[in-house]
Length: 501
Image (cartoon, rainbow, N blue to C red):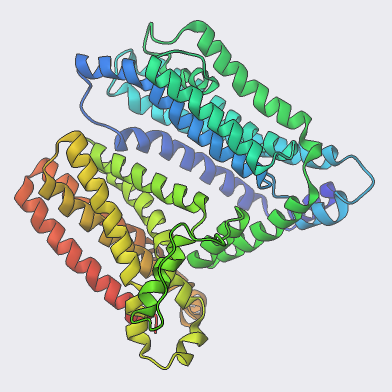
């Protein structure tokens, strides 16, 4: 049945389309390998920087990989990574044949894709490291070609084996916590006992004398053992999560094709089984007469966030702050930092976005819709800016940066990311008028669609421009730039609230 379905699809597809798709994949792979080293370019590390790297890189890499494997195990406990098509679930998996015969080819294809992506990313990061570290580009490129596919295979294997063995959330969390604890021990004592330290030693092989040979061999063994065990046990995957993931994945692809980002976010939460807590983290006292119901409802929603969403948002904010700090020497890193803050802002904006999800309810409140939407922006703005200022205070104490500059840059970045997320939510999918433009003026529609989808994340990226201005020009121009960007961001927030009507 699968072969017949593949044959029917190929019969309606021209060979030019297939060759063009292959050419695009090769083109993007080359672009990643060439562009990433340019984005991560910077001054070469001095002797002190290389010494600090040798001291702390294994431990930091181990902790990061442990956190990633913890997330992977939780995703596998939720049913990932396979998402077969509906005919496979309805006809093949319910047929009297071994379930592994149906799932193993899909798993091998997915593993092959993960390894291919790891090769591209590993080669790109290896070439980027060669521009700033000793040992030459050849050694770092080979190290990246080895580390990239091994890390990708280990992550996929962790997700797949947790799903195939039907690990519960408690067991997945226990294994993840154990991995993180051993990684922290390695980072503090500079030992090599954690599996994540073995795996994290692979990209550090060009640093001569740092990685023990047995640790590197053990890292490769872990990268081979995890996906191999997953492929052997893949037949034990439960049918109910596969059916659920198949339906949600098809809906997510359909929403992504219509550029409906809000629907994609909601479907992603359903896919990861995020549910609001029955008991809030903090109980807000109730009163007989509520003066600011919209404000209270926003904070009530935050108090019921699940732990997964809190961890995701804090991780994205920490990654954005770290990338913004590194952008002082590598300016193009603000693209990655802005993207991280933009994704975090999509979650922070939940009170405003949830109100827009029920447009007919807005007409039943008996109050001004514009004022109602503006009030729904109050809690997200205070929450996001407050978190940014807390991070700025911590960085000021830990790193010793100027408090005024860090606070201004953090506030501007938060407002710009939130403004971009608000624009993205209110714009929604293209209206019928733009769909008609696609038929009549396809060339112009491409430009309109690019601006429509690129403007919100671009605004979040521009919000980090004061960091680069402060590093290259000075503090005074950076503050002036921050004030201008903040004014534009506030204007975008007001426009979004009015457009939501």
